[in-house]
Image 1 (cartoon, rainbow over the protein chains, first blue to last red):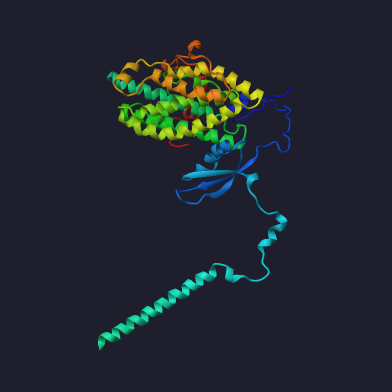
Image 2: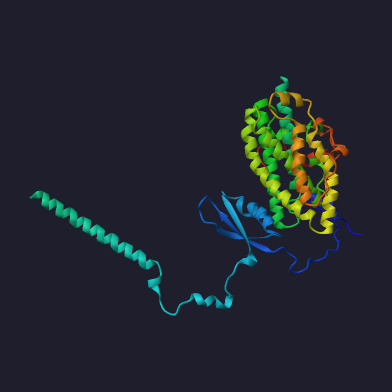
Length: 139
Length: 255
């Protein structure tokens, strides 16, 4: 005969759990399915993936998401999606994102450079324009 | 104090007491809930309840000069509390806690909805804010009641049994106050009878969807007494536990 588990937590003491009480381990995979949670911080903003949670149904997933991912910041909307409904590539195929040759021309930095050249050109033109104008005025 | 003031004060105290005690009961599940996600959800609801009771005690203090919220919440004598028996009961199993939460929050939602149009101005804005929190509490309770009511045979039987235990206690929410007439005539609050009616109309269809049989309210003896300070044997030990830290050093400036 063993004693009850003693705890500073009165709730545990009330449960009167024996020290040597046997317990049945849970079966592997004995869990609800997972949902991915998307959070919107202000109206019109895009919804951003913030994490996942366990839930037995989409409506409970939303109920849980609201507190688990919405309580620490302003929230204007939330989505949940069953993890199983998200399609992605096999890990072994992830190398399709690697490219054989450098394809700098397809990356947006190239266009950013163009914008810079245009701005510089405009500035130069403006400067030349002003100096032209002052010369004209002196005549 | 004139009867109108007394009536408002009485109304606010019982509301604050209900929120405080049910909030504390819910908080007893923290760390013991069936699954992490549910633990967080119910803990947040508990926190909302205690927060709402604080707001009401603060309002009482500002408007009627009652003691500060901590003193009101933790240091009154047991028979000065005006909570209904429903909120005092121990948590029991999760089925009872959920059904209590369901029955209580639907009543609260309607109560604050009615108070939004009160002639007692200071409660209006508070009622509006509380309603949005309680809307989430209702959402949480409804989803669970529907799911477990129509789940397995065991979950259905447990929910039905819990409903039968909790229903007479829940009718005690609507124990008439000695000031019902004043509250109604002064358009402060439409009264417990009107509230009970709206509550029954709301919960009945949800319970039906959940395949749960609501007991016939006319054949059930409501658990009255709480509103007059007569409590179950569960309240005193609960207050003792709640206030233990505060009583340990009432002069402490911070914890």
